[in-house]
Image (cartoon, rainbow, N blue to C red; front, side):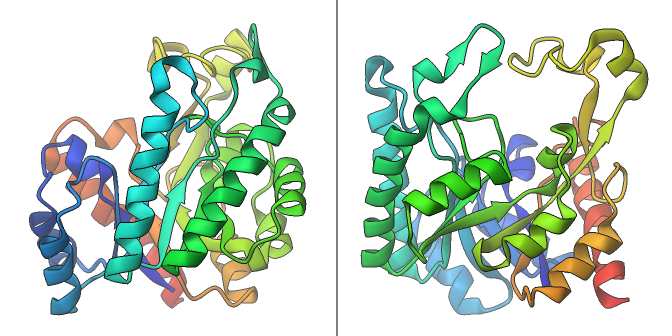
Amino acid sequence: MKVGLITNSLAWAGMKDLKEISNWACDNGFKDLEVGPTIELDEKIFSDIKKEGKIDISALIYCRNFLDEENNVGDEHKKQLIRRIEFAGKLGIEKVICSTGVTKDAYYGARFNPEKSVEAVTEWLKELAEYAERNNVKIAIENCPMMGNIAISPYMWDILFDKVDSDKIGLAFDPSHMIWQFMSPYENIIKYRSKIFHFHGKDTEILYDNLKKVGILHNITEETNFFEHQWWRHRLVGLGDIDWNKIVANLYEIGYKGTISIEHEDPVWDGTLDKVEKGLIRAKNHIERIIEG
């Protein structure tokens, strides 16, 4: 296993040049980059970084609602995702990470029924599998419930993988989202071993005092006043409720040899580029200590 990072947190803090990001990541011991949608797909820059061999680029990530029918938004997102699949295939980037998309009828009030989108998602994933096959890349679906997604639970994974039987479609497994949905990530690493193509290093902290006050429905569908009364928040690896010793042990058990990609969304370590950089390094050091034993 190796430790990498998602470029998003650095880009949000102002570091948007991929060469600068790769140099910083390499200088601070990261081994891999997962490149987010704010980074320009410049073939020369990507190629130069890969040719240098100092750090790998193993994934592109583009999570959007590909089934949004309003003003052709979904169609435009589909074009951008397909562009990334073709770009990845051309440059030898192994994986493209995305959401599934979700149809409008899956929402009613504060409730969400992902099964209403299964038919449309199945059709779209089969199309993606064909693109992935032609371009020799793998599609790793994030389990984040935001950004237009129904692959949010083991129950939904079973439904989708049963309908889309492709060795090109798997998971970008993010344990942090399982914590605030009160699911266990640990045994599901074992259960879905053959489908884990990529792994996100992100933690979650449950704020139980707030939970007792506002309940589970508060601020989970809309992110207004997210941090004021929210009963959970993302944290750096090691600062939340996840047992990372158990996570790493289970990844070793299934023979996972890929990347744990640090996804920094911790509000405590955010706000300035300096804090973001220190947060990424702190998370990397924590997970590396566990990997190395």
